Amino acid sequence: MDFKEGQYKVRDLALADEGRRLIDWAESRMPVMMALRAKYRETQPLKGYRIAGCLHVTKETAVLVRALRDAGAEVAWSGCNPLSTHDAVAAALADEGIKMYAWHGLNTEEFYWCIEQTLGINPNLTLDDGADLIFTVHNKFPDLVPGVIGGTEETTTGVHRLRAMAADGALRYPVIAVNDAETKWDFDNVYGTGQSTLDGIIRATSVMLAGKNFVVAGFGHCGKGVALRAKGMGANVIVTEVKPTAALKATLEGMRVMEMDEAAAQGDIFVTATGIKDVIVKRHFESMKDGAIVCNTGHYDCEINLGDLESLGGTKRTIRDNNEEYTMPDGRRLYVLAQGRLVNLAAAEGHPSEVMDMSFANQYMSQLRLAEMHKSGTPWENKVYDIPAEQDQEIAMVKLRTMGIGLDVLTPEQIEYMDDYSAGT
Ligand code: ADE
Image 1: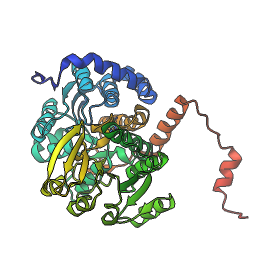
Image 2 (image 1 turned 90 degrees about the horizontal axis):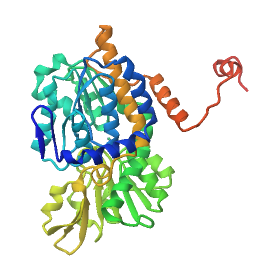
Image 3 (image 1 turned 60 degrees about the vertical axis):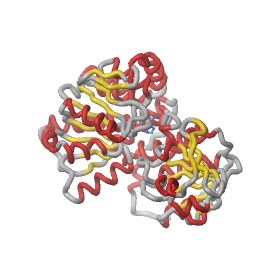
Image 4 (image 1 turned 180 degrees about the vertical axis):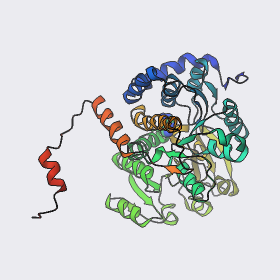
């Protein structure tokens, strides 16, 4: 481990060159972020701001970190999941002066130690994926709260919890819900999760998807993305849901919807994407087929109850990276990927750069917005704020332009027609 007090702790600084090549690759696929970085390098809107970030340390995140730094911010960073840090990327960022505390495979104590190190910069802005940093500031370091202008949150689970916190009056600074931007959830959550989850399953198993009974728990944006991509690969997709409208949407997409109690005995591959705990529990493991593969793509590792699986007895061995075989006392073998943690980041590289380009443009612009709010001298309330609709359209427009896609423009007559309520047929 390479450790420099107050500066970094990463697996191996010698990996920096490999990390730089990976970041170069991501930069070549993130034109919106690169345009924003170039635009704000001149004006330095984040000068004087200290950002603590807690978000998966990937090559795409490195592009965001560099853009924040180049806009003038001092940046300290930790990963938001014990298995998602790419050690080479962490080394590259540490090597270029980012205060980086992250390595792959850290334990829970180390995970929080890393977060706490980033608070050493006395942040006035926070950036989260899953809200662990905000919770740490609120619960363990409340003295820091008055100095924090605001924060941003990347993911559905984090936003959900922060809204609950705000409703209870417990949120002590404003937070922007980056997840709820259309150019985030409608792309990252759907197409990003869809592709990267299948990528993780394939890397950990090399299994054929065509013809398999592929059970997706949850048909929210992430589950929908996984289900659609699995269907596209020729799997027979089964969806389990608790929400009637979501179940109906899955049905009309041609998927079979049933209770997990029934799906458990049919599935060859299971993916949880609900954000809720105990989706797969003891009785489900008891009825699964020999050879069933189980994994999770939700933020926390609570969806598959591995304690229940262990309690069934039997033996366990590692087949390959991110693939553990549990042999039950009755001889059935069940396979758990990435220890029930997000399979797309633990067993693969997370979402592709192209889609993170839009998600991180929203993160970046939200951090700028918080700094602007601060400079204006009019503080916001301690609640969860949405992304402005214009920001979504701006990001989508730039993205389309970089893809060489043009749009029609409404004529004045068409605009008038849309607003006209004087005539019908
Ligand atoms: N979340 C999902 N994919 C990601 C990626 N590639 N980088 C950072 N966060 C992510």
